[in-house]
Image (cartoon, rainbow, N blue to C red; front, side):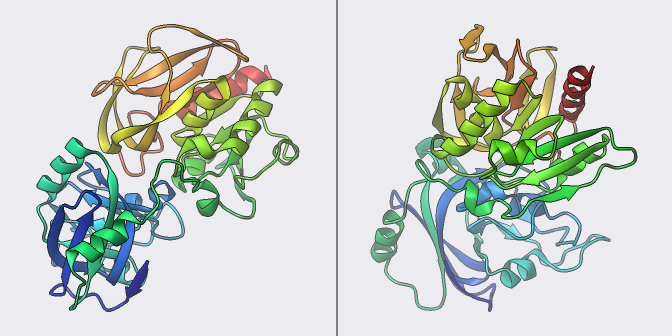
Amino acid sequence: MTTSTRGAARTPAVLVLEDGRVFRGRAFGAVGETFGEAVFSTGMTGYQETLTDPSYDRQIVVATAPQIGNTGWNDEDDESSRIWVSGYVVRDPARVPSNWRSRRSLDDELVAQGVVGISGIDTRALTRHLRERGSMRAGVFSGEHLDPDTELLGRVQAQPHMKGASLYEEVATKEAYVVPAVGTKRFTVAAIDLGIKGMTPQRMAERGIEVHVLPATATPDEVYAVAPDGVFFSNGPGDPATADGPVALMRAVLERGTPLFGICFGNQILGRALGFGTYKLKYGHRGINQPVQDRTTGKVEVTAHNHGFAVDAPLDQVSDTPYGRAEVSHVCLNDDVVEGLRLLDRPAFSVQYHPEAAAGPHDAAYLFDRFVTLLEGQRA
């Protein structure tokens, strides 16, 4: 990605998809060029949390909400230390942000972090195109003198695909750190950072858990050196088929029978550890309004998602695995995609979505309580 920090709303910009479709608009954020996988997010709010979610690494995010930027940018809602999206596509940027916590505009923050975007295009038509054709490689280019579309298309088509991409190590922490328990410490959890969001360890800390966040390359010895009562595997970007190291680590945890909880990428890692395959979805689930049924209770939750891959596990049968019986615990009501797994003979479960609600609804917050129940049961 190459950028200039001189964003200008009147500067011409173009979005080029790998199948040759072109959308013309105006620069939004930094002026320059960027490449990534074009995906769409259906959230009406929460753009700051979306942009700073490491799971969006190397993706050009299309906002389906027609106006973005109304609440500006604050200093509290970042989910990591930086914006991770490769590019941002919006229809109508807010001219003036208005929120009591706002410190600057979204455009200002995109410029400050060198994130290239485009505005003023028909995002509804773009979203329909991605739904029909699937997520695909794309490039955003802005400036006064752009190359011909055919040359830009060739550069887009030369980019790597998301399938087969190993990205989790490049977004994970390089050094371990601790998020202390809020109030009285009840448990210790080792959290494997595959692209963790800041609110996730915070939700555990609120329940009296001291969270030791460890690099994605952590070994079993490093995990058990913190004497964990449980182990957590986080969300993260890329193709889970490349994550052999985390899969081996999860199998070591399962062998010891330590309570285990995974979300998003962590759900796919559990699927692989149990012997299931994974596959790339046509256009994925991204947004904060996805309906999921918890099959253990029958309740339907509105949930926050960001995943382009899924676990290939049978929906309506109990499967035998090297670690006992396993079943699909949650399913997406839009398309029957597996949204959760649980072991019946060991204390381990996972979900494909984001229960930390940053951004998003709080319907799935109970999952952290379910993890605490596993920790209590193991201690007893």
